Image (cartoon, rainbow, N blue to C red; front, top):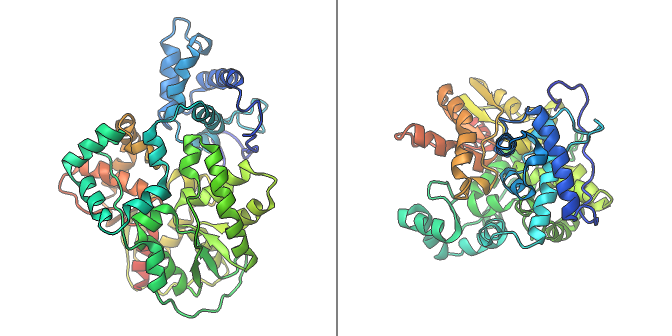
Length: 447
């Protein structure tokens, strides 16, 4: 993805997260002031998220109008508003490496979050929300799941959740399912298929189901299996794995990320050794294995092996299509689709593979929306950030509303629900919800 006004691709340096300098608060504040001063003089990223307006308001409120006049402790709200979407680094900032100023705003915010977390500055609410595996396992227990979903749907329950945990009453929280993805795939008898290696693909895939796919939206994993198997690609579930680590990364809990990596990566690398390619239906999870873990562990050969074998689902399908191996026997037109490309997919530099795949369906028009939904997993559900997140999402909501499409869709289910939340405010009678692109492709195939 080329940056605006630059012909050079950004260069991402490894995250030196275990060094003494990385974890030195005095040196952190020095680097924050340096980078904030550059951002203040540029201001190109003012419309990306709320970190930049927060920073610029702090500077503009000083008598000197300069970063050095801002109290260092006032930097923390800037950090808290960053949800590591990476869009400033990848698309806006002209000063990222190889520029000598070497600005990496997201990794600087991550460094600040890590120091804050190490100093005990993480709220219990944030620890709970980022423990997606533990919460999912508990909330999806039969009987318990009915209580959890009922509380999350009730006005009184949401007020209590706000009071106890600081989860905004108007934020969309996902449903939980006792009939998890892993249970469904055990029952599911897929066709007997012989893998056909072609191009960069081995032709057989191990699915990293993700916490969201396992507990909140198990039908998404079923849709992926159906589409891949329709195209002659056998799918097996990568079993006994834990959260990818993205929620803990966004919290700055890098030791927890390392522990999850130590559990997941050897198991995934073993699947690669058995000839499997790897995929995940959630862009943030795919990004974790393709970018974030390799930047945290640049010298780990197993991390590199997993990175090189990991594919976004539509990246994989379009690689097969390029080699003439994707079926185009679609039986249902989809009409017009308002398609939102989430940030964690865009920063993977794959091109618009999801749009291109959906556009193969006859009688289908795809309107591409490349702008942040403001969700970020947990940011949009937190009481102090929810209204800001909806303001960030508003341009996307207006685009979807204006498209008058038969479907609206995002590769990120959470972004899809954030958009739906905005649409519900705009139009009280609207009842239809987001549909994942894999679900739409399955509809098009009629399978």
